[in-house]
Amino acid sequence: MSLMGTYPPQAVTFVKGSGSELWDDQGRRYLDFLGGLAVTSLGHAHPEVARALSEQASTLLHVSNLFGSLPQRELAATLDRLIDSGPGQVFLANSGAEANEAAIKLARRWGGRGRHVVVSAYGSFHGRTLATLHATGQPSKHEAFQPLPEGFRHVAWRDADDMRRAVDPTVAAVLIEVVQGEGGVNLAGADYIQEVRRICDETGALLMFDEVQTGLGRTGRWFAFQRYGVRADVVTVAKSLGNGVPIGACWARDEIADAFKPGDHGSTFGGQPLAVSAALATLRVMQQIDAPAQAEAKGAYLRERLSELPAVRDVRGLGLLLAAELAEGIPAQPVAAAALEAGLVVNAVTPTALRFAPSLLVTNDEIDEAVAILAGVLQ
Picture (spheres, rainbow, N blue to C red):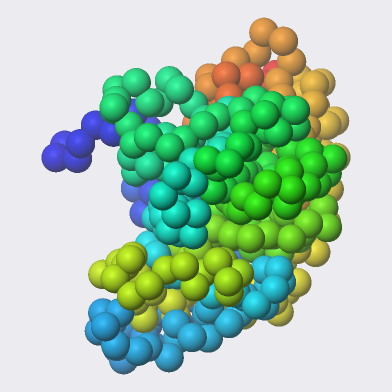
């Protein structure tokens, strides 16, 4: 194989998808309850997204950001309205890592020399560029790539006192996930998020929410931070924004976004018409179906069904981003592998927990089928 070995050997090769279903190159059917890592929130091959891509591909693919593009303006306005934290501006990128990179650069540009530090939590995941890797609170991922860029500080997860100690006059921003997705589907909780908002207000630091995995309806709100009645200064989003087409975005309130000047940041492919057309179609459908309500209702049903399994001792998460903590002595990785063999796609998000992030359009019948497959594997 000519691909670099950055992933483990791939057990299955998928060739077709439709809704919550996938088929491999041997013709076997699977239920997809991972959604490409919380990406295909409208399911595979959604007709509205496919139609938008086809029409845009035969109209205009690329002109560069040296020139205007009408779809960009509509997408930025829609994201600004859905984030609803005051008038803001959007930078369009190609991924969640790039969206977080833009947020980090914006925080440094806004803070100025001497106020450049970004604080994040242990267990977090913010990307794999050198800067976002250092923002990621997983030291085991850092060592192979030292020395990493300076200006990052990590605090204990859900420890407001540790956060308060860390946010000194050198700190430009706090970068936080309301739910740590890659860290294990760990919830911050209302008290913690509200206290972090107070700390940022008192010190003048920016509060930047990484909503790459949680944004756009998945947690039962358009954005997870909206559950807790706090204002965002910066929000990053990607994954489900294009329903599988690579696109990311960094939103910031007007007075913060104005810190960027022409030439400070850019992206050759960021916001190119094909990706933006996919995002616009995705957001249109999400608004038509009331995506947050779908996630809340289907997530409650999935949680209920998973909780019935004797080998599941706890289910945590919000909406349709859930983790099933397995009973003591049951390792998650072999269970995920056996589930794949039985026709269910999930992943071991920790050594003891499985992650579930299916399409927001998943049906109760599909949930019942998925839980039945998992029950068989666990038995």
